[in-house]
Length: 49
Image (cartoon, rainbow, N blue to C red; front, top):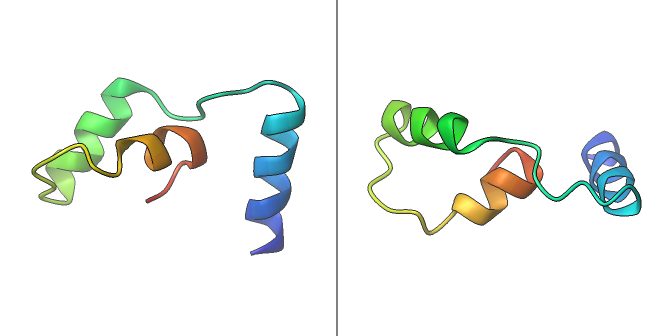
């Protein structure tokens, strides 16, 4: 968990807003049978939901 936290802090300090792309989100949604975009922001910002 520490590594994930450190990556998030590093991204915030370096003004990195998103770590994933729209295309990656669409692929993730399809692979995991997600029907809406409720968790899209978390996925795009943190790389996970």
